[in-house]
Image 1: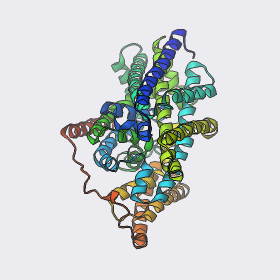
Image 2: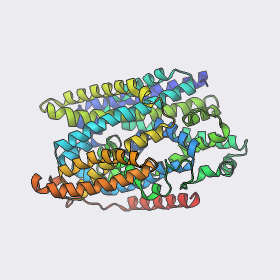
Image 3: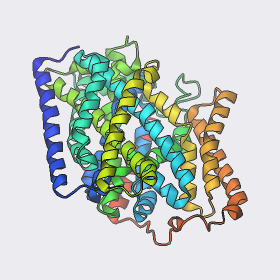
Length: 524
């Protein structure tokens, strides 16, 4: 498939327009002076609508659009649990986790761990996150993005990856988080519009022109198994989504870790003007998450009927773009690229933040603010360079990239979740207890994987979480007297942290629960 001249012109106009907006934002920032708070936390001035839009733009990328659409092709609507359960998770994060982080005025997640525990825990987790962001997240986004550009525009995947990397640098390297967050607003509008339009056209095509409602009826009638939200043990995809575990098991651990303790996600909320503004942004993002399966999963299900002979599920979304008329195809292609470069910019900004603030600054503590910003930019370039080199070797052999990412990160997710939750809500947690959770997570995960190979990875995550929880309690009790640090630091104290939320946030939370209940009851 190739883009027509009109499609290419629209796409070029989008690229140029985004760069102009980003440079304008960056020039305004330059007039105010540049320090680490300006560059890494957007001067702590983001409004709720920018926070919510940027959260979704950072989250929805190639591995979400292409990977989750591919999973929709392979196993159906059940994969939407990742999106819908995330909406509830965001509400929980907004009410119980954000107040603690904002009260402590942190830049990064490792910084909180240093306040709560010590530099060993901070450095261990900082190095881990940098490695995962570069060799799992960045590589996945670049690889799937390159394949999408090759499928849609006919450009070689390597040149596609280079274009995405250069484009993300062009609009984010100078302006930092503020340029990323405000351009994300445009990205999300384009993403939602393009995604909804593609879903609409797909349903119309499925129904042979009878309308999108008729098309949805055709899908539910022809592919009833693709609309089972809770998979039974005899389902061939049960290993990926093990039945009721998506509601009460390991998916909660994964979601809380991703939305609550993931730097490139939570960094937007840390940059809020105040707690109330951050919570409104979180609630806004939760409702956008409810919409995401319509945009990313539904086209994949429709592709089962329209393109039944695909050699790889991850070809579903790019192939569906053939339905687009000339002109609109360029717009939807721009939406896909918008999601990709937004996530690249967000990830590289967070990598540079963690490296600069948690690794480099403690080694060089007396440098100027401009020096640290400069180091952050160098870290961005190095991270993207490494990801470009390793993307194809790491991900080129996998069929469903989204499931691969979940499986890999699931090895460490339980330990990270235990470290933060215990550190925040149990005063007796020690540094040794935290480190034991980090190490134990990998050991328990690999032990269960090889001992019980038929255990679904989501159930394995739940079990590893419980084992790490028990290990942390035992080790903390045994080492409390040795560390002798009165529950580490004052940051553990919740006495001055208010978990009260206003009426608007509470109504949003109730509405989210009602909508999700309806979804699961309808497609149980």
